[in-house]
Image (cartoon, rainbow, N blue to C red):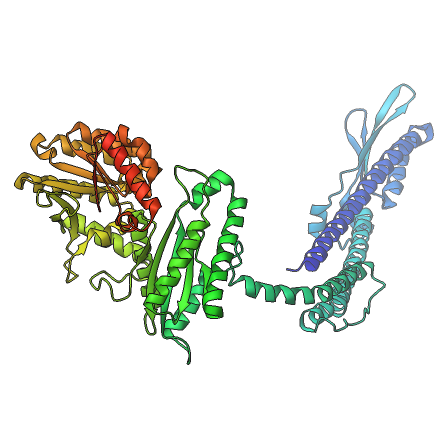
Length: 635
């Protein structure tokens, strides 16, 4: 029901209640007035007749009877009785005599009306005396037949007037509703329809009921809305154009966003256009410490730095390859460069230049742990699914993150044919593979001689290998451990590797080097579980085990690294560090850590002869290690 109908209905109900109430109280007031009049008539007649009968000439019984007969025959009384002093009724007239005389008026009054509005009995009595002597008592009651007829006719007139007023109100309401509906249709609905369907510059229909203040206010509001629509159409059109641009742009850096990049990659690979390169490369770099930077220097400054880095890399791309190469921001910390048409050697050379630019643009908020980039590179070709390309690029990024090095992790499309091809839910597929391998024991230990040790046959390097029944060839730890680190399973795999290494040492007399990842050291339960595993082993076996850590672990998490070293050293297990030349600040912790040896990276050895700085760094590391009694090994 509309608001107008609700209003009219409520007013109609209120009017009906008022009319019914007024009618009822009017009739009831008339009935009460007639009761009072009849009672007064009875009492007045009784008093008057008693005075008349008290006169000496009228004390004769015959005269008394004659006077009372005349009074009763007047028709105004229903019954009259005179009781003498002895209590005997001398004179009595009632309805029977009244009917015989024809004095009772025909009363066409319904019985229900008498029951609904009854009149009270109107009796009166008066003593008749002769001085001090009581002659008798006169009793009479007024005849209410005429009053009932008058009350009935008055009720009919009041009801007729009430019904006429109600009918007039109903007709008025009907007319009012039709008029209001027509006025609303002509002045409001028509203007709203015109406003909704007409052009912004179109004029609205004229006002037809301007004299009605309420409609005039509404139409004025519609006119103002129309003016606002006309004023904002141009702005909306401009906003739509801007939104189309913003939909494909990252709001912080102004670069292409993830949605635009994925659509462009799919178009290049799955639906290539004529003249478009059929192959190319993707370069992905991640700001590994973006969250830490936000906490240390503030989000506003970090956003400004991200814009500078993005613009610097984009400018380098455009300078080298033109508009066909571009940069996109996949999320908060991941940026991807699309290099269409660029072959492998040229792509690697160009990406190495971009990597050097990134390293030069790093923020050094903490000298002990500077900002680090993880970089990955892969190729693509026409016909290849975009999800497979992105999954391969993500796998390369996982390896770069896990290895903690500052080099580009390159994973071409033809590499690792046995590696599972993830879909868009690649992490879930990796998780199922890794958890199933742990549950079913599909992991074995692979060993090879340590090329950096003087006696390679005496010391071996240990690697975990994953054998998946669904794959033809096993995967090495270099392939699946980065995914385990990202999924929080690094601790489980390092503990599994520790158990396999101890089992191997029970059967072989050589020393065994087992590498432990930083992700495991940061696991709160890993240290206690590792110590429990070592405590159950024989000391002769434990003493031939060496746990090798990346120097980056000591640089970024010295507390956890030193705690792990002291825990395993308590059980006779030696500690070693690799790539100390890439994290020279770890030299400050060598005395506390007391490793069995430190291992240098291959890059430092390659640069030793051609780079004086590399020679000085190698000399400093060797001298520091020699002073502490620590052996220095090549990679």
